[in-house]
Image 1 (tube, rainbow, N blue to C red):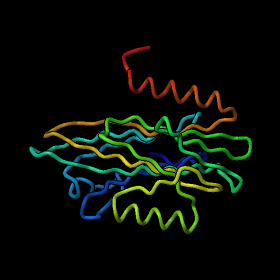
Image 2: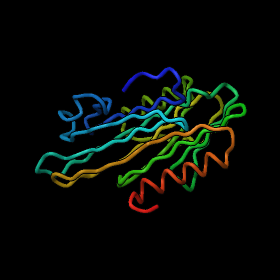
Image 3: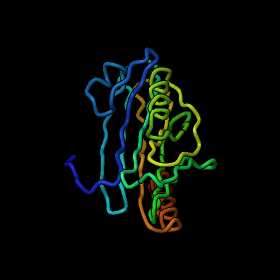
Image 4: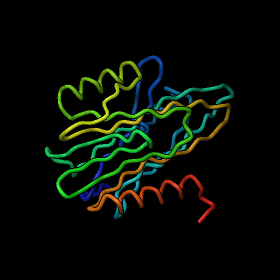
Length: 193
């Protein structure tokens, strides 16, 4: 993907295994670590950004894969507040007159989420998450932050799974929420209009 200087978010995927080994999803080493082929597509839109992934078990064996998605809202300032939604797989961020929502659509067996402050405490929690393969529940934070999804996948032989992480920035909470719902419904039900 071309580097775009006007990006509003930074989205990164990390594959993790039980040996406490991890690599970025876009790395060629994902297959040797997990036995899962991964294809990703990043897009920058007027409304925000998305990270689409397709994962395929190319083996004759059952495979498990844990994936972390990290999302940083580059428009967030020190006055910002980040909150995870208790009812949906979304995060809300407020900074100045802007609002951002992050959401995910996937067929993972489980989705967990946490929001870590971008300070020493948050970075220590993230380091522990990578070491243990688990998230530490942190539902709200002030200032700069990093939103984290943890997805657990189980693959049958030759099974393919898809998903998408997306982030939207706007000036009005209702418009951002409506756009997020339309995107999520469009991804969940691609044949319906």
